Length: 287
Image (tube, rainbow, N blue to C red; front, side, top):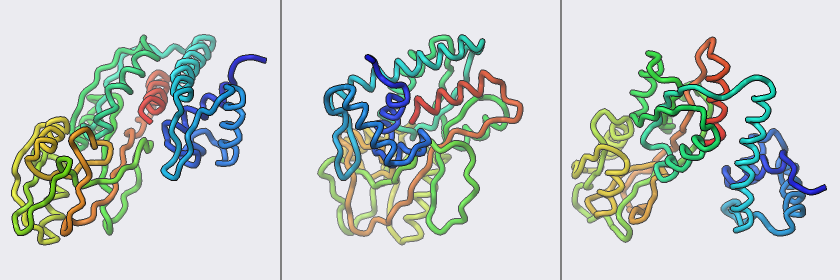
């Protein structure tokens, strides 16, 4: 028999998007050993290695990257064929709102992939702060929202709302090769005062007695990255905001930072079938 097994292709996508066999296992409802076995069989079928395994996880070989692109297209086509034969077509308008912090270097690619896979869905995408996203969702002004929450150490953990898309570390960031001058207030780069992350960082620095001054206020994460790479100061951002010219800053005296979680806001009661299918498609595209 020629061709590839759909379940194995689905597992390949999960592994490469998750970065490890262990993280992929719950996404495809398999044990870690079963995921490993599926990848072994897929590599046998492909006739060449698809994954590079290391201490930090797994990455794709050149052949793995090529097959990953094919796998996404094949799985999207399979899903579309299923919906077509069952009389369910993913078509309509979708108002999607995403926090500016969510994978800033990748979100355009993910949206393009979503558009290519579901050309009959008309996307209206807005970038907003998490608090504004949640408020707009409550008012019914958007259909789907992706927001960020800070997992502050020692704070009572609220009941998780919505599907977890990603968990990342917050990091202190500066220009490549930058240092923090001893004895001087920290030159802090931030977003506007309504930003929850800025509020958290300023509270944290004040509690720890770290002197600082706001050196620059950017309108969005992209502007903040430019200010960092220009050497204007130090910022706190989530790990996926690391970019050319922006590096993790190791400086004595800077307090440890918590994790953040990105979640798809939970479905509304009585949500339409189209909205449920669209929500599933967004989860697949954004992970």
